[in-house]
Image (cartoon, rainbow, N blue to C red; front, side, top):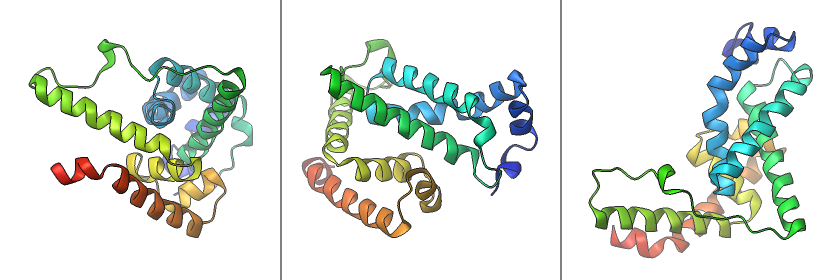
Length: 188
């Protein structure tokens, strides 16, 4: 599916400086992009900041978007680069990223019993820790394929890796995740 089939005229209007058209792009892709970023940084404030940077870069570089490329693929590619740059900068500055999110942003259901909420939070932390233990290539392909349901072709366009490498990385990531999540998978 080409860019024109996804949003006919909207990208062309945004390229010509139509802010409303770019706002439509932001409204359509803002949530998936921040979700993707959040899976990598696990900090809501940082994810929001990096999402803003992603869309600022997208706006500045709309003229460089090829018509045969899916808009979502292009945006996720920018987001991936922004996350990588942030991680490099954080390592360089020796800053620690807090893993706890404010209570108001927690996703637990208010109707969930306390023991269920504790188990749910434990499971989320285990998944998060397991994801962080994966190397970057495996974490990216796992996140894009499993959480964002991207095709191998889209992921290849975002990462520059061959489809064969992506399939191998995903297979290995799944095996490593199963191994790290073993105690939770056996008890459920």
